[in-house]
Each structure stands twice: as C-alpha cells, then as structure tokens.
Image (cartoon, rainbow, N blue to C red; front, side, top):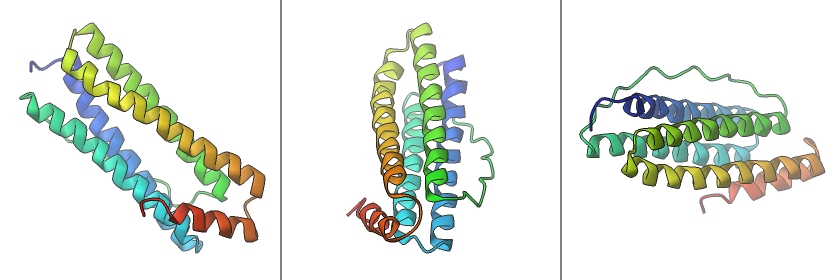
Length: 163
C-alpha cells in the first residue's frame, strides 16, 4: 500500500480511537470517584471497545504493508459534572468520531481504495449503533434526573453491559 493521504488519515484515526479510549477510561474513573460503579463499568467497556477499534485500523494498515505511526494521545479531562453531562460529552465524542470516519470513507472513495471502503463500512454501521446507544442513555437520564433512587437503578442497568 503506497504512502497516501488515506494512510496518513488512517494513522490519525488510530490516535482518535485511542483518545476516545482514554476519554472513556477517565470517565470510568470519575464515575468510580462518585460511587457509580455501574456507570464506571459501562465506561470501562466503552474504553476497551474504542481500543479495539484502534487495533482494527492498526491491523488493517499492517495487513496492507503500510507503516503505522503512533501519534501522541490527548490528556482527557478528569471531571465531568452530572451523569447527564458525562453522557452528553460521550455523545459529542461519538459524533466527532462519526465525522472522522465519514471523512476517511470519502478519502477511500477518492483513492479508489476498495479494501478500505469495505473496512470502513463496518465503522460506519458501528458509529450509528454507538450514537444511538449513548442517545438512549441520555434520554433515560433526562427522564429520571441525575440524583436519587432512579439514578441508582440506572447504575445497576448500566452495570449489566458486558455480562
């Protein structure tokens, strides 16, 4: 695989996926700090998933004989406000990643890179699921509020992810 604009963008996407993983890990730590272990568990699972996404890009580049260049990841915030604000930040992050995936797909189209297009289809579908999942949690948080017994019920519900 020649050193192309797409290769550079795929390497940058590894960074973005690792940034997301690190952000979710920081969110998990915040949730543990405020004693919402179910929320923390959900965020840890999300962090692992984002790391796996980074590895999909990493493996794809190596399978095609391209060079992987690991770029520095950003320091995430350590405090996120209410659980609603936390998930609004998560949705903002997922929407950012969606836009980046779409730009990658456009670059794959421009370069007539069919294997990249096929690989990126998986990510396009994945991002629809990711945004929907976070939006659903936001809507539930808006219904139950961010304090009291209902938030503890949501904490138990979110702890079930990955069981």
